[in-house]
Image (cartoon, rainbow over all chains, first blue to last red; front, side):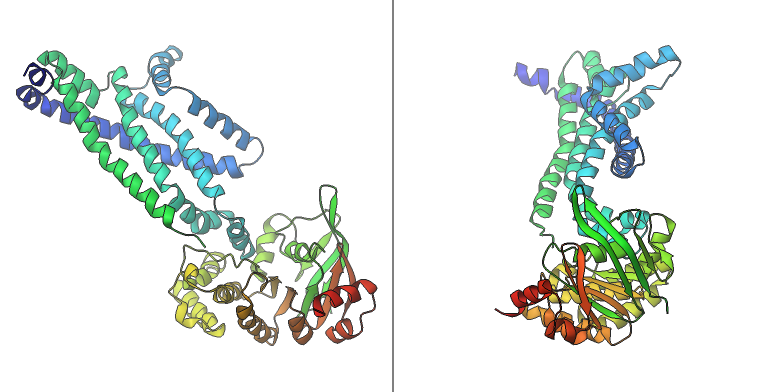
Length: 224
Length: 245
């Protein structure tokens, strides 16, 4: 009984539920924004890494390697607490989005690169032989095929970004985790934390299931 | 008359391995040229240089219809005029047969979709697969896929058609249908350069047969002279090995 009262206290959960939902909204705002900017940044990085002129592919590789190595929490703290020392001041929301985007675009770039490199060389040659410009070759021939390959790993990456939004609570962002810890302090009861955990699971479980289905679907798809 | 394709001193090397030792070759408008020779003789590399899918040495020059084939702006122009059919078809698997044929005219020539579709259906009918237009390439047999690839290249109304071993990856029973399409194409006046192992096709359709070995043109002549009375010993021994078995 004591355990139920401590972790699954229904009155406390009902009281704090609106707070948790407002936190969920912030979590989704940060997550969706970062996913979109991360996808765009990752595609850009992948393309310049594969086809950029001069030193650009090398610089892109350096970026990707660095931001895949740095722990997100460390990066977030640098962006929010260190950059103001050089006069760069971001709001908590922007700090969280910047840090998540920097890291997510590095991972996404590697996913897109693998997808593009998996397209048979003959597809590039056929496009060139027809006289298609590089842009049309990418947009009409290569990327539509690459995207089918990268959808499962990209969805996986989206799940990771959504989970990592919880780190934004350290820069005073009122996201789901932050609201839950605050509600816990107010109610002097950890039930809101359990509530937050359940909300995270409810949000991400369907995505995890979708990834599994996508992997199965695209896995059995025999390419000619 | 100036040749449609003028290849001068074409040299190509992969590191220390020389693939082409300074080829000189003129091809006239409307001519059907078959290139034969053993594997590794450089015949595929030769025709892949014509639309610069392979880069080549700076001392070499290829001119197609008055345009120098080099890196840069002019290359797109050359490629739009030069159709190519590959050994492995290389159709776009995510597009229907019809869209495969429509894509390049719309993107490169700016053809309106309705006009591109009309033209594509006409070409598909010409290569005998009008009824497969809405299918995806993966649902077609190899021979059908290669005929779509020919229609796709023809949709750009090229002056030159390059065929890089178009029947080499086909099951034997499908070789005929592709060769038939190529034969009828040869009758329309389009310039064709065909790398092939199909000696019967070369004999019957070519205006000129080129025998290559070791990155050089060893001998070239009309089909009857090459096949019935080859001058070079290397030509003779190659023809013996492919014809007598």
